[in-house]
Image (tube, rainbow, N blue to C red; front, top):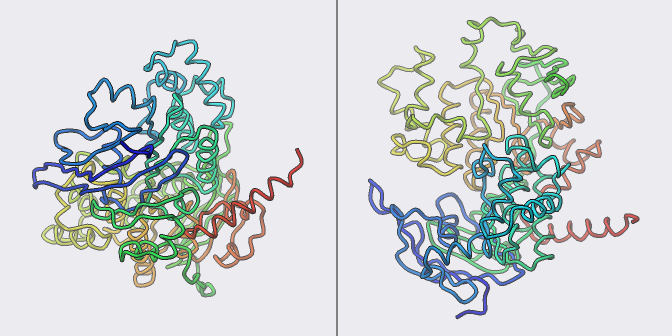
Length: 544
C-alpha cells in the first residue's frame, strides 16, 4: 500500500531485438501525489517514455518484457491487473497525451466523434457524450466549438490538435494525466497557452500530472519535482529549483550546461559584396487566403537568418516558395542575381544541390522503406559525379558521426529511431551535397538539449568554415539567440521586424515581438517564477 497517487518501484523493462537484448529501463523508481506535477527529464533513449508506457500498459510484449518492479496506483499494483481491470482504469482514471497529436488522432473520423468515443467506451450514452464533447472543446479554447466538432484533425493547427488531445484525455476526469512531450513542436505562445491550460485544469480537478520532457524551460515553468533519467536509470531526483541550482550528478550538470540562450550573441560583420539571396516583395495566396504578403530580405554568404513567428505566420510557406516546392503569386527571389522563379526545370534541377532543406517532421520527410544509408547516399545518386560510389559508405558514416549518430546505424530504417534521431538523419542527408544554403524548418525543435547544442555547434562550424548560409525557422527563441546573425519576425504573412539578434532581443520595437519574447521559457525555475508573478500581477490590474 502507498499514500502516493502513483508510485513506481524498481521497474525494469527490456526489449528483445535481432541485435540482442536492450535494457531500456533499469530499477526505476519515483512517486507522484495528487495535485502535483512531476517532470521526467532526459534525452532520447533515456527510458522516460518507456517507463510511462508501462504505467499505461502500452509496451508491446513481445518484443518488450517487464522483468521486475511494481506500478502502484491508488493502492493497486497495475502490473498484476488483468486486461479488463486495466481497461477500466486507462482512460477513466489514467489518461495520456502523446507527443505528436496528428499521429494519434484518427484522420478518417471527426474530432467530435473521437472525443465522444473516449466517453462512450466507458458506457456514457452517445447523446450525453456529444454534449460533454462540446463542453470540453469549448473549455480547451478551440474557436467556434460547435462547428469544430464536425471537422477532421488535419483541419486544425498543431497547437489546436494538442488542445483536442487534452480534451480527449480529460473526458473522464482522470486522477492522473501523463503528458509525453506535449509542447515539443509548438510555438512559444502556443506552448505557454498549453502549459497554462494544464495548470488551470489541474487546479480545477486536483489531478496529478506526469510530464515527460527534454525541455528544461518546461520543467522550470510547470514542475514541482523532477526526475532525471539517463541510459534507463534515474540519476537524480528532487524539487525542480534544487536540481537546477544544485545538480549532484554529472549528467544533470551536462544537461543544464547545454541549455541554450545563455551564451554571447553573434555580432555580424557589415555586409560586403552582393547577397547570395535577395528576396523582393514575395507574395503567396491560396485563393481567398493570403499566406505571404510583401516579404523582403537579403541573405549574405555564411550568414544565418532566423525567422520566428507563430503558426500561420507564413514561415514555412516562405521556405517552400523559395525552394519552388510551392509557386509564388508575385515577387522575386534572386539567387546570386538569377531569379529562382524564372528558372527552367533543368536549371532548377542543377541548382538543387546548392539549396537544401531540413523539414520540421522527419517522420513525413524520410522514406520508411529506405535505410539510413540509402536515404543519405540517395543525394549522390541523383547528382552523379559528386562522390565516387566506392566512397559512399565511408562518407555516410562520417556524416552520421557529425550529427551525433553511430556509423553502425546506417543499416536501420527510420521507424527504428526516436524523433530526435530521425531529425539528425534528415540533417545528415541535407549536408551530403555540401550546399551553399540550407533552410532549416524547425530542424532542432525535437532534439534533446545536449544534442541540440551539438547540432547547432555543427551548423555554426559549417557556416564559418564552408560559408554555408542558413535560413533558420524556429520557435525556440533561446536557440535563435545563440545561433542567428539576424532575426526576422513574421505575423500573418507579413514581416513585422527585422534586425540583428541584439537589436531584436534587447530592444524589440514591435509589441508582437515583445509578446513572443515574453512567452519564451527560461530553464531557471526562479526566473520562471518571477515571470509568472509578473503575469498574475498584470492580469489583476486588467479591469473586469
